[in-house]
Image 1 (cartoon, rainbow, N blue to C red):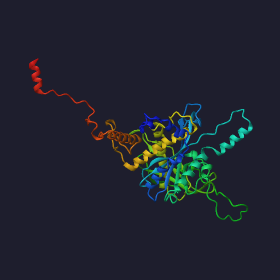
Image 2 (cartoon, helix red, strand yellow; image 1 turned 180 degrees about the vertical axis):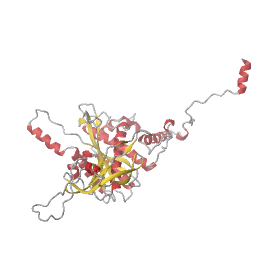
Image 3 (spheres, helix red, strand yellow; image 1 turned 30 degrees about the vertical axis):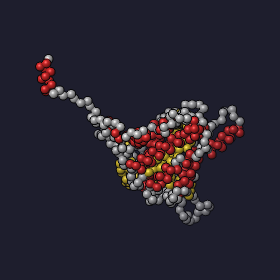
Image 4 (cartoon, helix red, strand yellow; image 1 turned 180 degrees about the horizontal axis):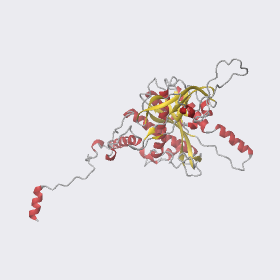
Amino acid sequence: MTGFLAACGRLFRDWSADYRLFSQDVWEIHRLFAPILEGIHHGLPASLPFVAALDDTHLRKTGTHIPGVSYQRDPLSPPFHVNLVRSLRFIQVSGMYTQGGPPGPARSIPLRFEAAPAVPKPKHNAPPEALKAYEERRRKENLNTAALTTLAGLRRELDGLPGGADRRLIISHDASYTNQVILRGCPERTTLIGRIRKDAKLFYPPSQAEPGRRGAKRKYGPQTPTPEALRQDDRIPWQEVRAYAAGRLHTFRVKTLAPVLWPKAGAEARLRLVVIAPVGYRLRKGSKLLYHQPAYLISTDPALSLEETVQYYLWRWDIEVNHRDEKRIIRVGEAQVRSPRSVKWLPAFAVASYAMLLLAGVRAFGLDATQPACPPPLWRRGQAKKRLSTEDLLQYLRSEVWAQALESLGLNSSHFATPVTLDPKCPQFHLPLASTVSYYRNG
């Protein structure tokens, strides 16, 4: 809140109304992101779908009286030792702003940031009715149902935009959302692309006619190879696809199997299985060649091409960059508030402000801009950059705000400071020869 007041020039005014905006006023969180959704929709070519990434994040808290705080698994803890932290849990959806489609770069811009607190567990000596109500709430109010509600609202809002009903929504997510609740409750005209276990049991579609067989029609055909078995099967050739990742185009080796059925998605859902071979990398030039883990993807649209499926999933990594910038730069979750409304609305307001900054950045400079409007410091010059960072955009925003403040005082911001030399080293002192002779004679 202090940063918001300082940016708006309200440090020396009454700030009680600003705090009541989050603790007492009634407004809808998703209305903050409506201009961002509209901006991404109108910036996309008409032939491209609307691609978004789904993930959840934790805002760490230490207070014991903050509403919605509970013990959650620390995502940074090692797999052999699970750590617990007190935190608030939020669901985030980020839309991908692109101008050329796959294969190519994209920038993720937050579209939703909604609280998804865990249901509080009653005490051990609670009556059986309280435990039964707790289990019932857990089935209705969990992370998966909250994610479905968020996706359904995003689909409805996209349909309300001009031409939005004709644009397909594609959601990429990690393995935690590849489950029965998400796959079976997916909104219409929405495609899901997520990771799947390497030992998942998939099936071929059943044959149309089985002579001599009695009884009900089969829902599933013979079992397919598991994703790991498909990767190790040398009889199935690898295919090469081009996709953009880590600042440049890469060639990925993939295998695919479609259509397949998965009991968790239902007998009517036709899926595509995609196996991505491990990608080699080196920690430094000339070092040993190492390999990442293979990736196993599943898509609810078998008609989607391999190139699009791989590229749309690779774009999902940019939502992790959003989480990092929101916590380290924007400082989301560091506000000391305890009101039930402020705990939910203040982080969403900060993320919406961050999303508006990103959208304004791509509109003003484009996706491939690497040189900021303000000159970078000397220790950053010469470094290869793939795009403007959040800090670059914030620096340009500060320069515009300060220039406007100086102009309001009647000062010209362009001539406010005297230009200095760009040489970081101290200049060497050269004594003229005539002065040297004079000094020697006088001495």
